[in-house]
Image (cartoon, rainbow, N blue to C red):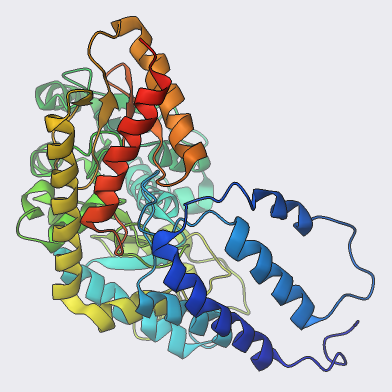
Length: 475
C-alpha cells in the first residue's frame, strides 16, 4: 500500500469498523472470561517481519480487532479484581476516542487552547469533587507514579531552597540527603519517584507500630524534632489491606515541625467523594502535595493521573523555565501545562475526565464509591461466613484481604496453598485476582473498582476461590 497519502484508505471507514466491533464486544464483556486461554495463542500473530509496502489500513485494523477482542485481558470487565484497575465509563471511553480523533498536543496553549482549557476545567472540578482548596495548583499526569513524582519534585525544590539552593538550576550536588519519612504503607510508586528524582529509592525511613505497617505517630514526631526540613509521605489507601495513614495527624506534625506533607492517594483519595468514607482522608486538604490516579476509581481509560500542590508556584519552579526561546512565557490565564509537570509531549487526557464528570456528576461518582464499598463488605461477609476462608484485614473501602484456610491444614503449608490458588484463579480466568504477602502470610487481595461490577460478580469470586481451593487441597 505504501504512503498513506496515496493509499486511498478512508480513516472514517476504519473508525467505523472499530465502532461496529464495539457493541458486540461491550455487550459480551460482562460474561467473558477475563482471559480466554483458547485465544491467547493469537498474540503470536502480532509478530512477523516488518512489512515492506504494508497491507493497508482496513486489513491492519481488522486484524488488530480480531486478535485484540479475543486475546486481550478483559480488564475493563466486571470480574477483573487484580491490582487496582478500574474500567472505563461509557462517557470516558467515548471521549477517549474523541481524544484520538482530535489528536491534540496538549502541553502548550498556543498549540491547543481547547486542550489547555479542558485541563484547567477538570482540575478545578476534581478539586471540588475531592474537597481540595481551589487555590491549589494542579496538572494531569499519565499515572499516580508520575503524580507522585510531580508532588515530590515540588517537595525537593522546597527542601533545597531551605538549604539555599535552586535545585532546578543547580541540581543536588553539595546538598545533604533529603530526609523522607513514611509509614510501612509507603508504596513502590513513591519509591520509584524518589529514585527518578535522584533522591534514592531506599532512603525512605518508615515508622511502623506493627507488622501491618501502621504509622507510629509518636516515633515520627520524635524524629522530626531533630531531622531538620523533611518530607513526609502519607498513604491514603494501602494496597494490601486497604488501610489509611492518619493524614490529619501527619498534617499536624508537618505544621509543628515545618515539614512537607505529600499524600499518595492513588485510589484512596476518592474516599472523599462519599460522607461514608470521607473521614478516611480527613486532613488531605492540609497536605502540601497530593497525587492520585484517574484510571483506578474514577474509571477513565489508561493513562490518567493528577497532582495537586498547595503552593501553585512550585509547579512552574520545579518543571518550567527551560530557557528555550521558541517556547511561550508562562501566563496565569493561558496555561502551558508542560511547564507544570514532567512531560512535554502530552495527549489531551483531560477529555475523558471532563466527559465522565460532566456525564455523571458528583452524585454519580459518589454512588459508585458507595456501591463498591458495599460490594466489598458483602464479599467480606461471605468470607467471614465460610469455614474455609479467613478475612485478614477489616474491609475499609474496596480492597478485601483474605486467604483460603480449610480446617485442619498445617500452618506451614498455607502459604504454598494460597500461592498455588492465586495461580489457579488467573489460569481459570472466570474471575481475576492475585496474591500478595500481608503481615507475613500469602493472601488474596481483590480490589472492587469497576463500574460494571455487581453482587453476582463478587459472589462468583467467592465461589470460584472456594471451588479451586478445594480442588487444590487434598487432605
